[in-house]
Amino acid sequence: MKKIFLHFIASLAVVMTMVGCKAFTTISSSGETSTGTPYEMILVCAQPQWQSELGDTLQAIFKQPVQELMQYEPMFDVVRILPNNFGSLTQKHRNIVTVLVDPTITEPSIGAQYDITASPQIQVAIQGPDNATVAKYVSDNRENLLYVLEKAERDRKVAYVERYNSQPMHDMLKERFGADIYIPDNYKIRSMSDDMVWISQEFPTASQGFFIYKYPYEGQRSLTAEALVKARNRFAQRIPGPADGSYMTTVEAIVDDTGENYVPFMPKYRSFSIEDCPWIELSGFWEVEGDFMGGPFVSYTTVNKATKEVVTYDCYLYSPRDEKRNMLRELQHFIYLMKFPKAE
Image (tube, rainbow, N blue to C red):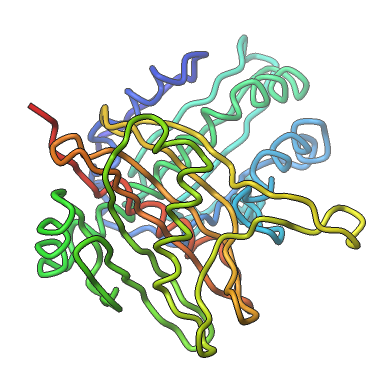
């Protein structure tokens, strides 16, 4: 059985490098398939720890709200169990976090192992000498802790799409956008033109989709938040709503805390890189001009240096009755299946 144990350290970059290894695809010797649903977690924690500041810290981290959603949904669905209930069935879960507090342990630590009793699986072990020390250590390393758990979920989806992608859709997208873009075969093309493709998966009460579009790059002014929202609205108008003449647009004002007034709202803007490819993320909300529909969106923008074009992958979700986290996360994971050529 292959095992990897990672000690958390202050530098997230080092942790990211370490967890990016082959451990995520290692097959456990048991040959068992892991159980559980995406973003569900088994948290093994004794009662004294659960009722202390350590338990409060763990809940605050794992149950914090998903920032991209208007309504509350936790980052993880936590199923807490006692150590003596951690048996053969729960040991096969996809996400497991165990907590051990023992005065003989000299220093707090957090470690991760992969595919131990099933596959794909991540098991995170948190330990230390006392509740207060471990609570502080967990709080100080919360971003690292969330990163490895989130990456485990993302890698599972990426592996699935790599296996069950639509080759015709890949070929069409590469022809239009000059990049390798892999999408699972359960998504269908709704419309396409030379500069935009709209793809979605439709359900009786939900729509899970995205549109990819391109336009000439005119320097850094093309990548400001204002410019990206303006471009988004220009292309989103091509996505029709249910009523005649209705179309998608970006929410520019939201209700304030009093619930009585509207205040200006700008999507959140951040920059990051995937394998040396720079991206800009915008996360906000969309609505339909001329009708009553809306939901969250997250867009990812980069510059195709080979063609000198701005390319945006814009994912959106409409799901008024059901929880949205897992559906939106799936769309967000697709960005890790997009590879643009490097300029010579």
